[in-house]
Length: 253
Image (cartoon, rainbow, N blue to C red):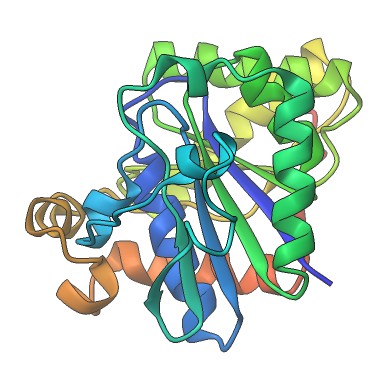
């Protein structure tokens, strides 16, 4: 049976696509069959970071000219990509029913895979709909006021939909794992104070020059910088995802 994981962020530029790709690679290295779906449907860029140039995208499937299997690209043994399209406003504003149909078709065609959805940033109806459909939700954020505020907005809407369970915060670009945990604690206290419910913690990712270097090289970090702190952090998070557990911190202090 497949497991669906959505990776999102309240605002752009916090490392969401890099994290999605790296988690997919880490899960593949653990022997899992992994499908990465570039679900930033109108402004896709996962293929750029993976260093591939697919001829077909999810637009071809939605337009009815190709099957889902035909638009799926093999990245390596155990890892496939459904590329999004770039500069297509109609894809970014698909009806929610169409998104549900797409989600159900993906899970039908790939019944035994870890399916990672790299969503667009923000709280559009389309984003929130996809978040609610998935089994597990990861909210990536950085220690900046706008990222904190926007991430809280995502969590608030998930809470209103009773979807905070299996939702996990991942602080990115932290100075140390200890500071990342403290950063999470601050966000969790915010959730407890205003939402009355904790949110999960599944790990943090170091600020690491290897990340920007791997993106510039268009070479995933697992091969370009396999000894980097960020890749180590990603692998630890992937292990928790595969083990179907994270740490909930209900402390109100």
